[in-house]
Image 1 (cartoon, rainbow, N blue to C red):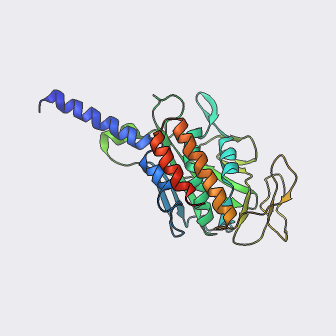
Image 2 (cartoon, one colour; image 1 turned 180 degrees about the horizontal axis):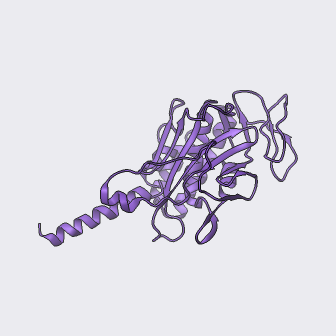
Image 3 (cartoon, rainbow, N blue to C red; image 1 turned 90 degrees about the vertical axis):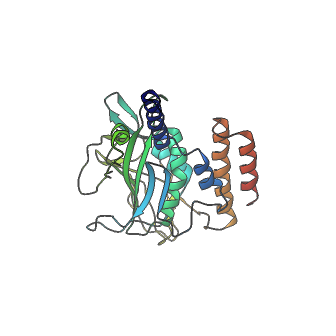
Length: 291
C-alpha cells in the first residue's frame, strides 16, 4: 500500500472515530436499549448506562459525605424532567444557549429517569454527554454534571459545559479524564434556569414531578419549603400543590406510561429518518406486544 492510500485510510479511521464518539445513540444500541427484548433500560441492579463512546450515565456512591442523604430512589416524570433540563442555559463566548440539545435530551432523559429510580440515598448520578450542538459540522463537545434529588427538587451541578477533547483523543488515543460537578467546590460553569433556582453559578435546582420511594415525603419546588404530608405531593411552577398519585412500578398504569414514552421516542426517530419504516413498524409491534 502506498503512502497516499495509507493517509486516506488514516483520515477515514479518524473521521469514523469522531462520528462514533459524537453520534447520538439513535443506532442499534439505542433501539436495543429502549425497545429491545428486555423491555426496559436494564435490570434493577444496573449501575451504568453507555449510550455512546463518550456518553455515559452512572450511579456512584459519591455524594460527598458531609451532606445529608439524597431523596433516592426517586420516580421522576420523564416529560417534566426533559422540560426542566431543556430550560437550563449556559453562558458561552457566543452568548447564552441551551446546555443540552433537544435530540440529546430525548436520548438522555429515559436513562436519567431510570438511574434516579434505582439510586440509593447515598448515590449521585454522574453524567457525561458528548454531542454536536448547533450545526451538523460543529465539533462534538462534552457536558459533565452531577445530579441528585433533595427536598428542593432535582439538583444539577455542572463542571464542563463545552469540553473539547476529540482532537487530542484522535491524535493520542488517550481517553480524557472527566470531572463532574461538586457540592463543595464551585466550578467554572455559568448557568441560568428558566424555572427553579440557582444555588451557585454552576449549580441549579429545578422542580420535577417526583416521589421518593424511600419514604412518603414532599418534594417541594425551590420556592417552597419542604413539608410533611400523609401522601407524597409536589407543586409545579404553574399550578398549586396537589396530591400526586404516581403509578406503582410494575402496575398497568406504570407499564402503560412506559410504553407510551417508547412509542413517542420511536416515532420521533422515524420522523427524523434515523430509522427506516420497516424498523419502525417492527419495533412498534414489539412495544405494543407488551400491552
